[in-house]
Picture 1 (cartoon, rainbow, N blue to C red):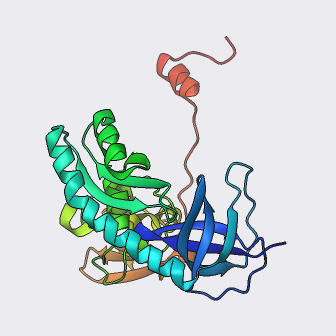
Picture 2 (cartoon, one colour):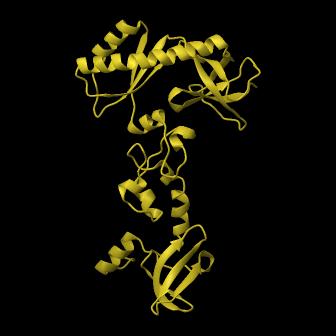
Picture 3 (tube, rainbow, N blue to C red):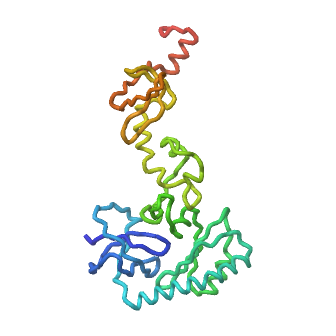
Amino acid sequence: MPELYTVAFKGNRREYYYNTFYHSLSPKEHVIVQADRGEDIGLLDKKIITPIDFSDKDKPRSILRPASEEDKRNLELNRSDEEKAWKQTLELIKKHNLEMKLVDIEYQFDRNKMTFYFTAEHRVDFRALVRDLASEYKTRIELRQIGVRDEAKRIGGYGVCGQQQCCTSFLKSFDPISTADARVQGLSLNPSKISGNCGRLLCCLKYESEHYSETRKKYPEVGEKYITPSGSGIVDRINVFEDYMVVKLDSGEEVKVYGRDIKRKERKQTSFFSKWREALNIDKSE
């Protein structure tokens, strides 16, 4: 079975590729890979040890060969031409009066395709722009609308934690995130505290959300009354990681109660129909 690698491309894009032709490869070297109707170039990221079951649709393409010095020079030429195309593209966008923000331009290594990434609030009719770009650059043109999270991923940057953005370093997809994920962890709902560089909720809010939800199920709600061996009080706070809650007694003293010592209150389970019968005083035998 050929070795499986991840290959990194411009804009922090990463994809899986098989070493089908069993080349001798080293991490962080440039390789030529199969692409859509041609070839592309990327940086060998890492070898995947754990087997991955791919569907026929998502089956990885092949690494064709290690990049030569000439290939690397062509890559530099592509990057230079991408920068030159930026100003020209902005002028064409203005000419056609399109409400869109250009994010990035990327040549496929063999220059058989040129991709323009942009963001926009609404759907954009860019057919006239595509015609002008195809006439100017004499290659296949693709305009790809992306979201603000994808924009942040392509640009890169560092989060409030001081580490490289998750979407830049390892995330392959974006899971739905809501303020409920922040609320269950007891975090401030101040947007400036829980938003990333993209302006959306931090991706890391999702990492521990499930653990918090599962752990907190065995605890009473904060503010709820609770009786301890030392007396009754109010649940003041819950420490999920050390698995205890702090109960503030009526005397002002604080007592730790660990999860293993919490006794669940038994609740009588009654169905809607039993409550309905009881309210209407209907005998079950009727």
